[in-house]
Image (cartoon, rainbow, N blue to C red; front, side):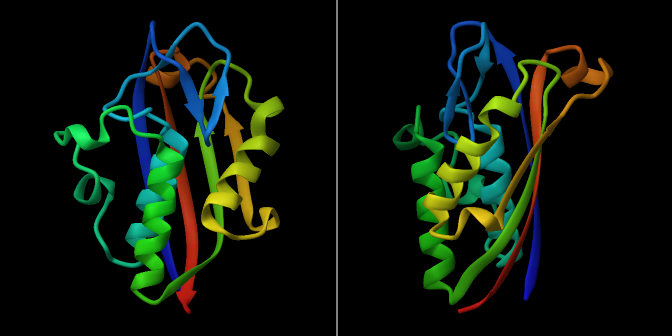
Length: 157
């Protein structure tokens, strides 16, 4: 068994879609990034790669490579899972937390869990997604950005 942790943060800006865990959420701002800036999925991918000691998403999907400009992070997650499989690992479970003052994410959690589970080819019961605020403290509390943490457990296949 191996444990990995991932963290990511993106700035909120006007003129971008807000995508978290593969779910497009109606909101006046979206996350700025080279890809779709899905901060939740990015933290999850980094946790998976970290657990297998295979680097991070910047190594696999560099932000200076136009091949990943506007990329769908769920498709990138599928590629990360394939890399894990190629290296002899399978995913056991994950626990993720999104930190955002707004919008309220509770109505979207079940769909996020389902999309992430399908992308990783694991049961939805093995995917936890939670959301919290920072009580208006710091950059997330001020609504300037959204961050996410993810912890994963993998094992040899």
